[in-house]
Length: 311
Image (cartoon, rainbow, N blue to C red; front, side, top):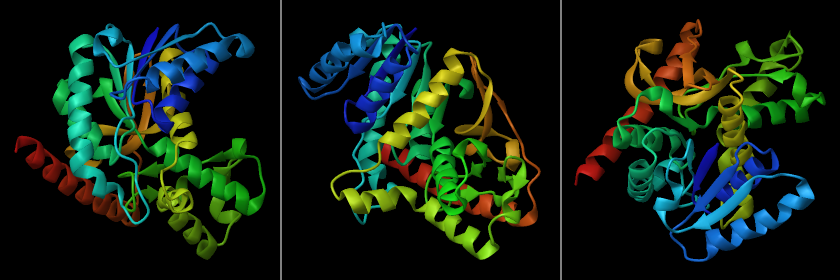
């Protein structure tokens, strides 16, 4: 198994380290346009492998030819959010970066699975799919896993139970219009609505939607990277080990939930063939309305991005 991580910043470097720690690949390539940064970080990680008792080999490079025949490509490169910025503010510049990175990677790894982490994530996943023209099972985004992890964390903080017992789902775009689903949220099988009053649960849902921005405000010069990296690695693990886990991923819809040609977060089965199935939930009227609002927002952003690329 050979995995390439594009971008040697905080997210990319953390992804590479976690992949190596878990020995999910024999060879990990960390690539970035900055000279010396991927090489230095990769060597540092390589030297930690004896201590961690892992035989994964990590190499840094600026040359896409070194990524040849990768099984999985993880796209993390892009500008990070700053205080006051929305994910959509990153649209123009990151569309250029993702187009360039994915185009270069695809030249050498046309058969790889592509996991997109760069923001605004749903739009960048759509762009990557169009650049590669690969089927949707091979190009998908990390968002719902991260959003759900935040949601589960806040619930654990609220009622003081193990995170392992909390299950939840979040649909829609990765941003303020995401759609947490309290009706599908349980703690050891107990509906969350039996454990947390509606008013307080609404506050948790709101905090989840603004979870990334909350971290940006604290950091001031960067954005979240530990949780996003862990989410991306969970997707890799499900593919590499053919676990067939049901995980919320950003996927190109082809009629599911009544939508076409738009990428948003939905529950998906991840296995050795990538996205092997999109799960359609039986949503009620309110949930459908919220999802529609999110899809409309993502669709508008996709149109804007594609027009900019054409120019």
